[in-house]
Length: 156
Image 1 (cartoon, rainbow, N blue to C red):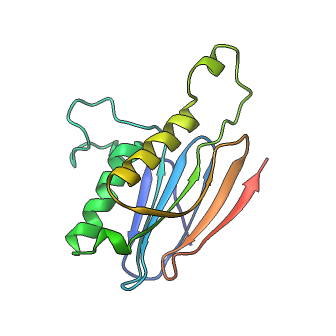
Image 2: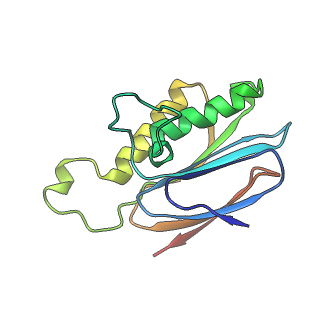
Image 3: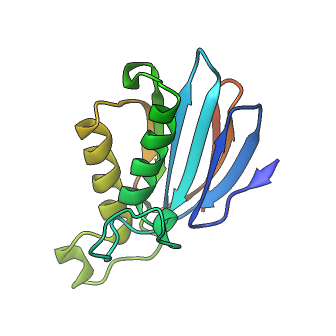
């Protein structure tokens, strides 16, 4: 079993189990059931501040929801996989600390991550078949690239 750190991604054409722990961060899984190809990311922030968005040369690209999802889509496209066959699941985006009065006036990082991921997946024509998002809890997830299953445990 592989443990996915924040800012990392795992793409697998062979059977793998990947686990990660989320707070405000976001995990997106993509799985193609016919070829049994899967990917999972652990992104920290919604978008990259770099003016050259989602560059392959950017060492921090997997820290950002926007860049990571773009990379994942590209990997599936390189294998001529139709977007209509990809199943996506999204987890995380929690608010781990009580909001201050100032925080309530703006979106938390967790909510920004969720908003970005769902917007991009919809814009790219990808189906979200499962999600567990926001709230005030953490999550431990285990992704199985063999069958696309995600086991999740809520953590206080």
